[in-house]
Each structure stands twice: as structure tokens, then as C-alpha cells.
Length: 227
Ligand code: UTP
Image (cartoon, rainbow, N blue to C red):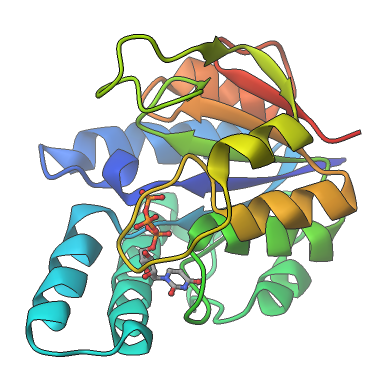
């Protein structure tokens, strides 16, 4: 059975607008696809983690503490998805990528959040993929593809339907700052490059698109070739 790790952005899972409807549909789709592909899911923090991070910053928190706040929220979000998935999912949220990989098996879906300060959940997804020897990582964000610049701010941004992992590395750069948003975590890009893990960058609110990505089919978003 093929293996896929999905990084679901918090802004996709829980934007704060009737979220149970989407989460239910996502869980149903994942349950169905898990008959064909072995799946692990990492959930991000979304605006709630940004709120905690910003409030912690105003209170004089260190970057390490702000990251810890973000991690806490990602784990709560992961727990929420397991509630929707029911028996097929884990009841305890793994704290490390290795733990997630060892819990993963065909027909089950392991869900987790962040691990430790210094990176985001995209990097965790790449770490799990490395441990599980996964075929691909799917980044389910609220952007439909990779662009040369933020398409919401720059109307001239170039859209990629296919790119190499080296080209993606040029787009993302390599900084880290709590609460900052990247198309994919630079550390995750490095791990994917070293381990030749292909990335599928899709809009996670489009469930048929996300399903195609999990199955390794043609997508409307960006296919990142790491081979
Ligand atoms: P996210 O993975 O949601 O990061 O984790 P993000 O870049 O803010 O979100 P997206 O990709 O735009 O949706 C939220 C925050 O939690 C901390 C980081 O501070 C991150 O910004 N975090 C998360 C860690 O420090 N380590 C982890 O393993 C995961």
C-alpha cells in the first residue's frame, strides 16, 4: 500500500466559520481513501495559534515560548480531527514524528500536531514521511498552488503547476519566525529534498482535489518533483 502524509493548515481545518461541516466531510473522505493509501495527518494552528503567539509576544514571551504556545494549539486541532474520524484514528496525540510513524498502519489514520520549537507542522509532515518512507507529502493550505510571490498581494505572481524541489527552495528561502506564514516550511523542503519525497500543494478546502493528491493523481495545484 502507498503511504501519504498530509499537512493540513489550521486555516483550512478551522477557519472559524461553521467548521464542523468541513471537518466532517474531510474525515469522511480520509476514511474512504485510507482503504487505498496509508495515511498520517499533521494539523496546523491557524489563526488561534497566531492569536496566542501574538498575545505571548506582547507579554514578553521568548520565541521558544511562542512556539510552545503554537504547538499546544496544533495538538488541540489534531484532537478535533480525531473526534470526527472516530475509531479509525488514534486516541492519544503523538508528540514526535517517530511515534506517529510507528503507530501508522494500513487502514488506520494517525493524526498529530507540532513536536518542538523551531519549525512548523509542514516540517513535521516531512519528518513523518521520512520515518514512514512515505511516497508523498500533501500540503493542504488555503492557497490553490505555489506562486513566485503571495498572489493576494502581488497580481504579477507567477503560478507553478509543476516545479522541482530546488525551485521550491528558491521560493521559500530559509528563515524561521513564530507565527510567520510560508508556502511550505523551509526545513520541510530540505527534508523532502534529501529524502526524495514529492510534494503535492493543493487547496485543502477542495476535497476532490485533496483526494486526488492523496492518491497521487493529477492535481490542479502544484506538483513538486523531488526526484
Ligand atoms: P503551524 O504549523 O500552523 O505554522 O504552527 P504556521 O506557519 O503558523 O501555519 P500555516 O502553515 O500558515 O497554516 C503554528 C505555530 O506553532 C509553532 C510555530 O510557532 C508555528 O508558527 N510550532 C508548530 C512549532 O514551534 N513546532 C512545531 O512542530 C509546530
